[in-house]
Image 1: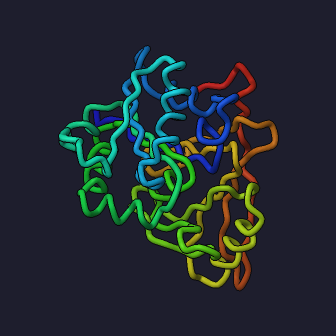
Image 2 (image 1 turned 60 degrees about the horizontal axis):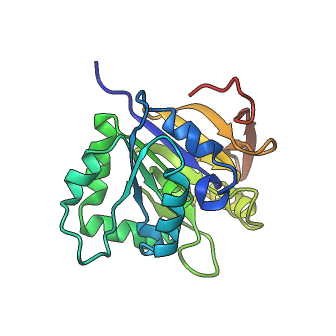
Length: 241
């Protein structure tokens, strides 16, 4: 039987934004059926910022897992990227500049390795840049001062917009881009909400905050329509991956 392919696309939250609330990160670990899964953090979008990597280890060394990270900017690294990534059970992509991240990944063929990892059943996850990168398209702030559409890796169909409730221009910009046909229909997620996909289909929405959720945004004529999706609040002990 082929391995189940899973992606957890977070609009915001997790250790990047909520060190005191690791509900989304715990949910992610629960997607792997072993007590201490191997988790690799890819902080490329931040330029492999030391402070971001340190925050990852602060959070994940306190969780039941085996954390590591892969730096593409570390000239002292001699570990083959493919061997590192394909030996994991979870690959967690951090936030930052999506455009720069994808350019670096393509230079090092990391985009191809991530597709291979997904096809093998390694769980892919991420926040912000690490969310929209998995889709065909996304809304990014990689260009300073504006929100623009850009192409992603295309593992998931349609478009994605993170930080839907966390940044004032996200919702109107996404609506405008969908309405005028600059970007296809897709999913938006609030800070604290995550879209959990099985293969290329949405399995469920989960949230670390009681009011956080996700949305389906589609074009209807010359306007965009927004449908609120039910979210499973992870503060409820009955949640299941």
